[in-house]
Length: 453
Image (cartoon, rainbow, N blue to C red; front, side, top):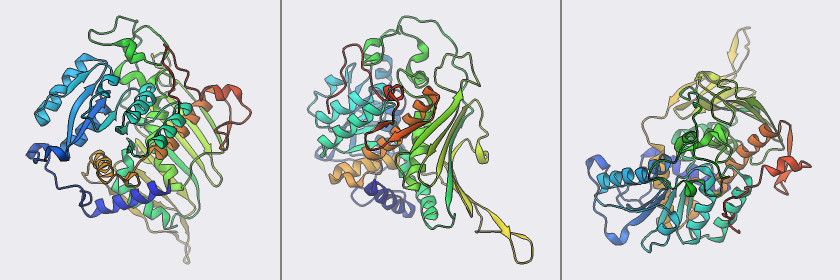
């Protein structure tokens, strides 16, 4: 964690001076202005596992700024997605990648250096471990898993293969304005921080309509899509993007947006595991829609010297401080609010010498982030680590990803059990609560086995 923290600040400070990276990565041209020529021996050959959504966004971030990266293979259970992304690669770079329905066949390729994993969450652990054991570097989307047992397996797998670089897709870690806000927090000007608020209000999220089960779309290997998840009839609500709102595959907004925001909160506070967790919420906005995970949730994480409050809501945008998402560090002297758009300081006041209320610290109006694409910086950071063969360069390694994913998973367990839970850091489970500890398990189905690490 300490190395990740130092490297986040080092890289972000560099990016403040210039939105490129160090001299180890050559100057690149954008896709719009043409890709510079790179010798074949200097190419990094990427494959993508799960190409619909963030898997492709991550691959595009690599291709759009780094001529040394090629996409040579795509794996997805949906033939229509494979065809679309193959055309996208050809449009950007002129080559046709090899296509696979089963990613394990892709991993048999000899000319493959790195893999991007953008599958639904329930596939992350298997694809991650298989990719590492095949000798590939891995960029894995967040959360690394919605199950704590899988998080621990992935940690052990990464330790088994230290020569492979692992970057987790919590790209806020490559954001320069987050580094600026962190420097301010470290100055101590906020005073004692007693509460950290973390939230995601998602006004764009509409009810998921109830739909009947049906046959899988043509060209979809549905059994492969299910993988280790429980066997169920195909339903379009559970497929592609909406998998996030079903417990079989993910953990709702808590593990989707929550992992991003909780990561920054814990990083700034230098914290890892909470002492206790309690949660309350439900399907209050859309009680009759098809999703399973709560559309409204408040979760309190207790640490030694502060509490962290997570909350999310769908269908509305007016979150705390008038922001749809963000993190607020509430101190005795001021509050620091940071979100994806920028950051600000809201001072507390005190009675001045002449009886007027005065600010305890100087107010700082909202500092916008500008137009820098942090996902591209995150991709460049991954390639830098590969080229230097140095995991300490990574802005978001597997340990960082695990801290955020495990914390978010704890919040979901507290919600699903409906009671306050106490975490045993030494043993990695909940104290004296067998029912809660059942939720930590991965519970593989359909003949699939949890990787043995």
